[in-house]
Length: 232
Ligand SMILES: NC(=O)CC[C@H](N)C(=O)O
Image 1 (cartoon, rainbow, N blue to C red):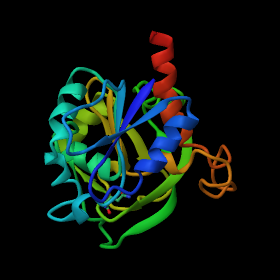
Image 2 (spheres, rainbow, N blue to C red):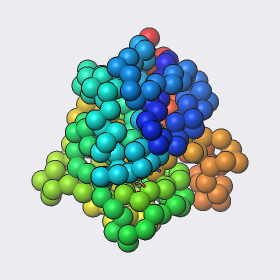
Image 3 (cartoon, rainbow, N blue to C red):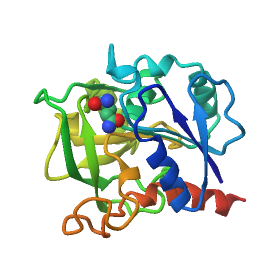
Image 4 (cartoon, protein in one colour):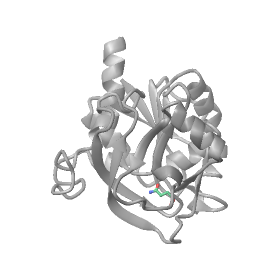
């Protein structure tokens, strides 16, 4: 399976996302934000970082990049798309996901190993997890507070589209402890924490905290690769 990882000016975690794809058995394809060509990939990752220096709002300028018109078409046709942190912010700014991300309620950048519960294991990016499973992966952001209207929050919860919730600590004031959501079809998923930084033993979160030796993030990438194999 070929998974495109889009690099924007200011992306930081594109190489880590490519590495995670490779470790999961996929073939990473480096894509550039200024292109209109998705190069025939089967899935897309919008990585973390500080695109355009977080000017205006994090993800706002990147969401207007040339390649985003192809990303929107691909997402709407059912291609799996994962937005990680800055990528989640871009997907929200592009209206592929509902709600928005605002400055952390405490006003500071935060970096920590974060426990999450996987609330929905039926999405393209979570099918290798069990519903209710707890995982620990790194979190690092300044604008991670998830907001939406009460009606939208009720609908997201009612439709099972809250995919991840923060456990123990709500690190940024996200409403209803929401760490990640999906679109209606479940092919587009965005979350603030970083699965691509927890895919190799010894490099992920403290193993005394993580349930599976610091590799709790690998399941995101194996989920989408395995689904493609099953459907082939
Ligand atoms: N790690 C990231 O992708 C950070 C996203 C964004 N720059 C923020 O600080 O909120």
